[in-house]
Length: 445
Image 1 (cartoon, one colour):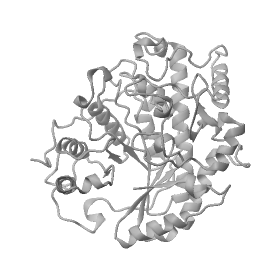
Image 2 (cartoon, rainbow, N blue to C red):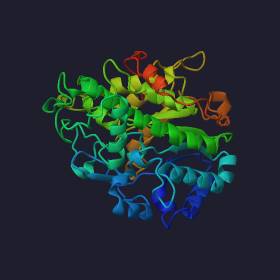
Image 3 (cartoon, rainbow, N blue to C red):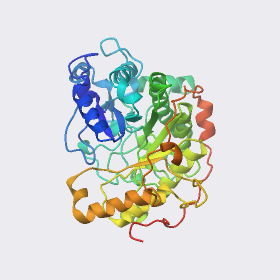
């Protein structure tokens, strides 16, 4: 898996793409007989967990932001987040005459043209489309660069002038021109009960709060829908998978308000499904849902975090499978031990191996985070090899992808338009599949 950074490729100016370094890297990978998952990374590298280098978005785009800082996500106090362009400018021609969506679309078209030989040769097999900060379909609600600390609630990021205007228009259309964006949702490191919005019987359960949360989360889903629609137009007919990443916001999952998920744009409550609508959107474009925190257990965090990564993973994976799409994933934090590996294996096959064929529930793929010197320390590498072996159910290497259900077929054209009715229907609670208590193929078993 390789981030293909917008900040590197189009750094010299509008439509001045330089693919030289990536071409060299990809050809080297091809010579080693490996496959490539290419991430269309339209966000800044730097400021998130595990970032050890800084690659900002292109300078000429940031120059636009110097004159119009509202192109960036903005919190209630007016603090800007420069990791990724605000959804509010998706369809505004502010960038040398192009909209943000056109910037992303043109970039992906140039990638296809320049990497056509590697795609046709079956070297590039996945195109994961970055849809927000850290490449994830979410708002930048918990930026460490602005002082957020786990397990803070985060903040809504819709106070730039473009999203403000959009909300006021939506509220007026709904017959409530007096409604404004939330003023009572607290700050990054507050606890839910310290706020008017997220406390028990707080604003989030009022008519006004529900309207805001529906608008906020729908903007995110339609943002993903529009950009994945562009990606599908570009890559349809080619033998590649299309994917998008959803963040594993596991803290405060056991709080009635799910505050951290709400500020990130996932309108997920005990009686409202926040993830199946995203899965339905992905299904329109034959996309794979890529999820994270697969290595985590509920006991990994303090009780005050109200964290439930195991339940969250079960919920998200279940909803994707119910929508008929494939699920892939990765670990959230670096992990080298049996505990994390066994949890990953459980999530990869929640009901274990089926001796008579393909398991009923099975993840499509897993990406290990990350390649480092630590992985190759002797004991770590031996255990890592066991993880790979167990992922393949102790089977020997098979070079024919069709034999184990991984043959990549030409990407189909998007099948229909996503509607508000689709989202409302998918948001009805539907439960999750049942997981075994532990994997049947432990790395230390």
